[in-house]
Length: 274
Image (cartoon, rainbow, N blue to C red; front, side, top):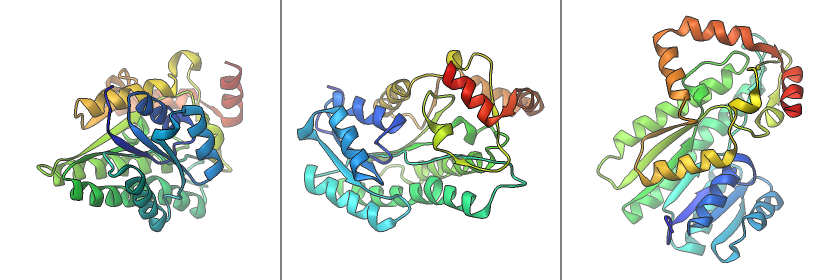
């Protein structure tokens, strides 16, 4: 098993990408702590994953530093250490820059950025005591490419990308690694769970079922990147070419995105049918 004797903590582990990572890590021999704000949801994910002797469900709100400290204490108390900490908890905001409400974009940053920073600090403190470990931040391709009507989300993920890169340099020669994972179009309930603003449009590519990949594909990429000591993982890998294109010819990518914009409700309905 690739993760035998390792201990992983996964925030936002009760669904989607987080649950897929927990499932794969457990299958590869890791002891896994699955968190959600709702303990029942975390426990339900734990039951789906199985391996009861190597899994723990825990309620934690990443916006509360004490919850994260309690989470680390619970993980160490049950399994003795933390080898991998995955900052996966997060959500989106569908609204324009013009109309998005302060309470919505502040709530998004509280979870996506400040919650991740607090998680990193809590994890790093424990990993220093162990002389090693890996912090994995689940970011997004939207952190490289500014997505219209998801500007706050893109900004939060761009911030997370920068924080991860800087921390990786700061922690050189400590035995602690930081990896940033940037998924693209993933088949999850992300649009449904996002904060719904008043001015909602969404990119609607043709044949969305052909462009999206399942959360399990992200989990596989996370595992591979972790084992290979990667600093950044783009998944699916084809999005790396799009990121390079955006850097070289942003106007072309922006023109393409503008053409794909549709009312969010219509785009999500078509996606559900697909």
